[in-house]
Length: 356
Image 1 (tube, rainbow, N blue to C red):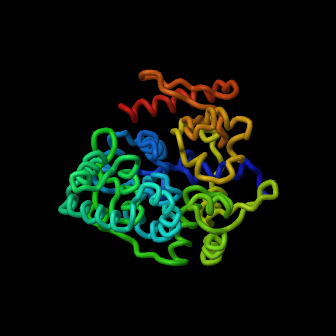
Image 2: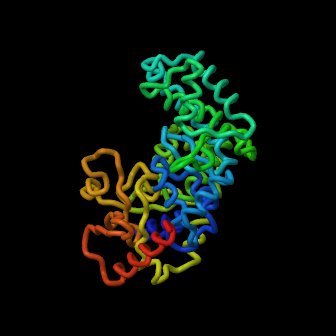
Image 3: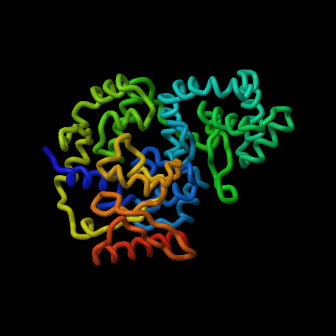
């Protein structure tokens, strides 16, 4: 048996919000495999906060160099992912995701011929290392006679990204431009079938563990049968942790690392400022280990699906925070200790350095 404190410390180490940080934003993407990025600005901070001091300019430089790409690898949600991993991830998730689009495509009157023609036009427009913003790509389709109104344009981009044709690459104004995945990210790992699913589970646990098998199934929108097969393949690479009667999976590497290092005073007192939609909260089906149910309304006011930036203390969500001009305004659920207030001030200073 282990305690919830053990579980939360391992998660903080896995997420690189305590203990050793990653060297750069691209290394964070490799560790977590996928970092939620439907909110572009929040996703950039999610990468930087897990490093030793990367700035927003550093994150954008990794995007511009193709060291990180952005796409919809699972759940229909935008994520930052390592470019070499995106294709095999799509190989695991695309069939189920595309199957789920059939009804919406019929409502939008998008048939196979439309999707094929849109793909050919996009490939022609982007070949040779070219890139286009979302609006510009839709203008190209409109000029070719493909209507993009009423969410048709969004679904064309989404389908072509889901099927490995497009991805979001270099920065473009305040967002990113579309590029051809094969041109922008030529490096690739070729994993298929159970081997790919096992890699998915291993990488998820390396950056999110300890977690339950049901957490993983939710994260990739997969099946429990596939997840069990992946677990069996990993064998000695995984171990288990039982907390309050629930079995959690953890990589042997993370379990050994946590056992070999005692929690420091700095870790106990740290209060990182995590962005909206951060993987530390959203990367699990069951979020009760880090947030009490009665406080969930404070994170998602009105249940509108918009998650607020969060304060984390000793592994638990301890409040929210917001920007007011150049200042960071913490809004803790309960009063912070003097040490925690100093930690918040340090985290706020780190955010200001990041934002420039």
